[in-house]
Structure formats: C-alpha cells, structure tokens
Image 1 (spheres, rainbow, N blue to C red):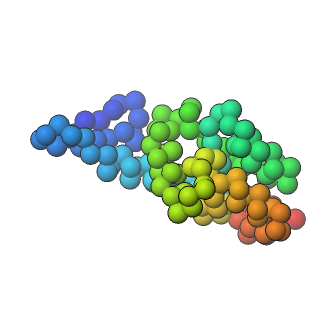
Image 2: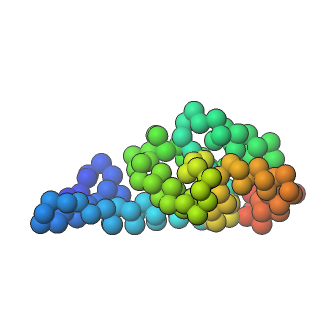
Length: 136
C-alpha cells in the first residue's frame, strides 16, 4: 500500500505488510532535492536558523561578495531528512558537524571548519571563481 502526503510531493512512503515504513523513496527524493539545489546554485549553505556557525559562514561569503543560497532546515518540510543526509555526507570526518553544510559548484565542500581553512590557505576564492560565484 502506498501512502502519499498531499502536502508535499516529496513525501512518499512504502508500507510493508508488517507495518514498518521504508524511507527509500523519500530519501531518494531528498537526495535529488539536495543535488538539484547544489548543482543549480554556485554556493549553497544548509543551516538552521539562529545557528551561530551558519551565520559566520554566510557573513564570510557575503564579505567576499558571494550571495549564497541559504536553506534553513528548521523551516523546511523535509528538514529532518535533509539533516540526516548531510550527517551521512559529513560522516567521513569525525569532527565535522552536519550543519552548516556548504556546497560550492555542486560539490560538498564541508562545514564551517573547511570553509574557514580554505579561506585562510587561499583556496576559497579560486573555488568560488570556478563555481561562477565570483567574477573577479
């Protein structure tokens, strides 16, 4: 039996005979949404409203002349699922927090630590230029 939430086209769950919901379709849709946002914008920040590190990331990029697309997960219908996906992306680095998560040029850059490290070592501006976020 398929259950579809009419409030969001991204909410689709398959129920098994035992009543346990599988989230495969929903996770695929969440992945597609994140992929679409990351590839459709030069710079994307996934954060939570009021997050101080998200604010730092936004201010750093704005200070460089970049207007990032900001997705605040606590204001998104699928925010928890996106957060879970970002957590899995950041899992390769034990120190990495799942948000803020920064994508540049369609690729996952990392969190605030990676963003600041790239800024300090001089690799951030070339990344932003290659992504089309800066025209210097």
